[in-house]
Image (tube, rainbow, N blue to C red; front, side, top):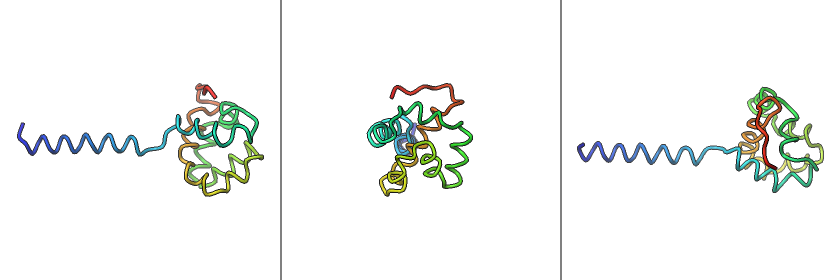
Length: 110
């Protein structure tokens, strides 16, 4: 292999690794739920995520109304779902609720 090919391959590999770590993560969403909402909502993350089906969570996320859907699932968390902190972690929480929705067949350990 020529040195240009090696450099291009290394750059491609580096970009691939960076893009996967920069994306949202359902495991991180689970931890964020446990840290920020479990006590407030009074239910486990599994029960929270199973309030709706994957299509319902998808529709709310794409419409930009995920915070309203989450408030329906946990009315006690309304203030949190309207906060700036929520906006920063919304994609992680979305991945969590989507991956563990009622029809997903997955059960989180929280």
